Length: 185
Image (cartoon, rainbow, N blue to C red; front, top):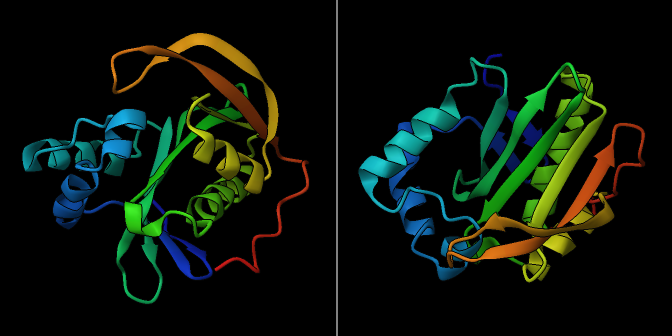
């Protein structure tokens, strides 16, 4: 699978580039990012390794984008489809936003764009989204992006604080109604 760019109105989802390294390192300094995302990209060499992995779609098991402002090119966040299984017709989605981009439905719009692409291009039937119960902002993203809450996974994932947290699992199916995010800035 080759990397593609997606137009999402005021957002552009584009493949990651090496020149994103400094912006990724800056994003990883945020305590919220360290807690809920814990990406190993807090130094420039780590960020470059992260970007190489995210930029290589050749295995077909993930698709990862930098989420940018379509007008300025400013990095706003990330969205990735991972654990893609064409045999099962499903994937999982992960995302993050830089602090300045939060509260503007950017994550929800990016997740929606990635899901629409996955359903149309990869013929997936289901995308799952998991987040720690305490990460209420991710619950809002899931709901806005058209996901339905399915349940709770007990002590399912170790987050940046080193503790195992219960997670909520959401899903969006290919035939679920797509959310109307067009009026959001």
